[in-house]
Length: 111
Image (cartoon, rainbow, N blue to C red; front, side, top):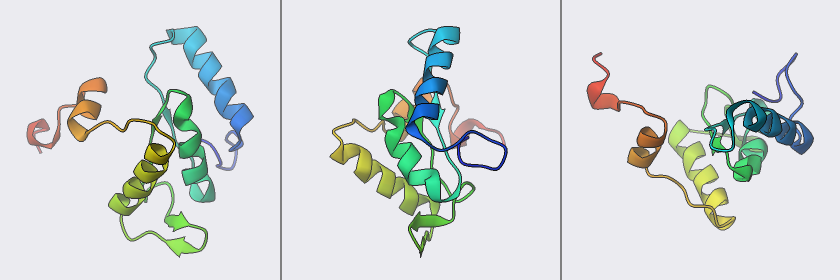
């Protein structure tokens, strides 16, 4: 997580450094995600174009943009999806994401 007190700074150099380390440890096919706290959330997620999954949500930031409170996680997801599609990146469907990350899905979690 970038942009928190005591954590890594929310900048492209640190993101690329972490990507290089992950790939050197786990290989080129490593699944990794970019997430950042507060005002850094959308900018860092947009930098995830270097092969990362991205994560946004109210648990990391309550804002949709500068001075604009988000009304829901879905609103933040819609915004980052729009940004990534404008950058010509393909966005996984929920089923594709579950498969890539080996997740069960809501119907199979047992609670």
